[in-house]
Each structure stands twice: as structure tokens, then as C-alpha cells.
Length: 523
Image (cartoon, rainbow, N blue to C red; front, side, top):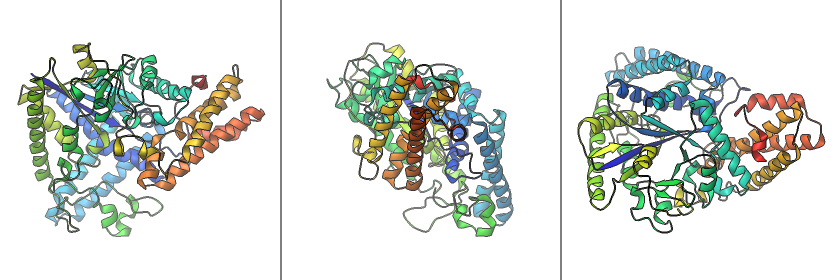
């Protein structure tokens, strides 16, 4: 064995919980991820364990995601979501009975949705327990992220940065039974000095994009194929461009293969309105259902029917190709290093299953082929690598992110830059409240804790990202403004001594993330 591969999956969604609405479109982001990504991945993991296949995966489960997965209201709504899809695909099996080009897919969707529903119920609708089981089996290293995926380089207020990390570590330990050793900094956004905050909270490693390592000072001897220690002693791992491109690139990567399922052709838009109406949004808006009958086919409006078996075979071929390329890469790297190289391959978890339907099959084949078919490369977690190589070069990574152009432009440009003056002011005010209220009464304490929640939710990098990309912009703007307005009203009421208990109860019900938060984290 000559080297290591670390597959890192970043599982994150913004906090989309709207108890005030019976059917809220953005909540579907969570349900789609549960049944199209998280459960398919968990099934792969558990079957590998059952079959005695040794593997390692690193996953970030962000605090907002953990909070939503453990929320009883969202669990019940997720169950209702999958029951509707089972009902739809039961009808689809009958509708396509004499359309053989679609019948195989209709049957497949129905049994997969039933399987997902049963798996969901087997864990009491709480997938955190499923992830924890794989973690405790020693195959999955779960790391944390900033509390609400806050973009740290643009925060300025050090106490606000500290709060993002402290709340994240506490939430992780609450749900997963242990403190995290690693962190996925939101958007891989690093700035010099933040590693000292990570160290203060027991974090041992984090990830940066390639240039974060390559432009480090001094330039690392082994580039991105070994971690470096920041001056603080926290390790930084760099993303491998080659392995990432093979999966990420829509044109050159595997997901663009013409035999794979086309994401955009969905029965929610294709079928007759009255037929599909019970399975789309209750306001009548056509939405994705996850039932898709066509393959990518090519850069053409015309699409050919999807064949699940052909796509499965292609995922096996691509897994073999990926492993072959990593093996050659490792052999070349190992010839010039005094230690086994490590290839860091990070991806958004939702790529696997949601965007790239065959992604979980690809990972299943890859892990099995690595176990049975070769002896050049082995899977590893960052913690295991640091245990094997506790001495590494000291280098200060450069300020960076994995966004467009590699720095902060995605989250600070003409369409979203207006948010920061409000976020900075709110952070300063929150620190002022923590300083002022040393021994609050019960109602004041509730208001102070809720103010901390509203600030954290407003700081989510997702809102600025959505404003930049142009999708769901109204929702992102609304969420930012709502949390800032709620924070400001609480701030004013605390300073005036006139707290509206009904209003406080209302927003505690709506924004119930981090129930154990202590506002003194801003002190």
C-alpha cells in the first residue's frame, strides 16, 4: 500500500423550518436531501459493513442539518413527503404498465421510496442515530461546521466568530456523543488567525481549497498531498484538483455521462396538471418530485428514456476508472515523498443521489473495488492520517475559499453586500447585551438567548450565496431581513425593559434552533 484517499462529503442545508405553514416549498430541500442523498448513502455504508468491506468516509453534518434531522415536526413532514411519493409511484406503475421504456424506472422508484421510508422509520425518523451508528463502527468520521454556516472571513467581530465555532462544537457533541476533531469551515473560507479559535475549541484539522495550501508561507514541500500545521498547530488539508474535477465537472466529469439520469426532466413538470396536482406544492406550483424518466442523452432538447441497469453499469465503470487514476496518481506521488501521500477529495454530499442520481452507486462500487481489487491505495480519515504522521511541515495557509475565483467574491458582491453592515451592527450589539446583562431574569434570559439565535441565523452564508446565484433570491432576502428585524426588536425591548412575551414565544417557536444556547457565548 503506497498512499491514501480521503473522501470528504460536506452535508449541509440552511435552517429551513416553517411551522407557521402547512406546506412550505423551501422545506422540500431537506426532504429531497433525506430521501435522495442521506438515506442512499447510509444504505451504502451499512451494506458495506454487513459485507465486511473496510472503508472510510469523512462527512460534515452541519449544526443546522443536525438540528433539522432531529426535529420532530420536520421528521413528521418528511414522512408525509415520502408517503406521497410512494402513492405517486404506485399510480405510475399502473400508468406505465404498457410503456416498457418507462415501466422499469417506475418500478424502481416505487421500491426505492418504500425502502427509504422503511429505513427512515427503522431509526425512529431520526437519521442522526443512523449516522452515529456508522460513526461508532469506526467507518465514518463526522466533523462539524460553523454554527449556521457563517462566512467567517467577513465577520470582523472576533466574539461572533468564536460563537459560530463554540455553538457548533456544543451542538455536535449533543447529537453525536463526542466532540468533533475536525471542521469544514463554511465555503472552505479561511483567513489567517482563525485557526487559533479552532484550537481553543479542540479542533485538530480543517480543509482549504488547493490554492490555500499552494500559496502558503513557506510553500509546502509536498503541496496538497500532505497536511501542513498552521502556526497554531491545527492541521490544514488541501483539496486535490484532479480527483475533484473527475466528479465535479459537468462537462468532463462522470455525472455528465449521457446514460445517467437527467435531473431536470421531472414528472412534476411533464405530466398532466390534474394528475400531478396532489404531489406538487399545495399552492399549485409545479415542483420537482424526484421521479424522472429520461437520461441526459446529450446537449439537446430531445431526451431518450432512462435505463437504470445501463446507468448502474456505467457507475461501476466510472468507479473503476476513478480508482485506476488514483492508483497511478499515488504511485507517482509516493516516488518523491518520505511518507505516504494523501489525496483529499471533497464534495457537497448532495451531489451524490440528488444531483447525480447514480452517485451513491458510484461510491459503493468504488469502496468495494478498493477493498477487493487492488493494494496500492487505502481509504483513511484525516484523524487517522495525523495519528500516523504526527509531524508535518509548518506553513501558514493563505486567505481563500472554494468559491468562484477562490476568495470572497461570491459572498461579497453587488447583489449581497448590503447585508454586512446589518450583520456587523447586530454582532456588536449582541456582544453589548452579553456585557450588560450579567444576571438576567428568566424572561430576559429567554430574550437574550433568542437574540443570539436570530443573529446566528442571519449570518448564514447561504443567504448571500443564493442572492449571488439568482435562485430563490426573494426567500434569501426575506430570511436575512426577518432575522435582523427579530434581533433588533429583541435588542430594543431588552434595553427598554419592555419585553413582549407573546412575540418572544412566537419567534422561539419559529426559530427553535440551538435550544441549549447560552447568550454569554458572546461575552
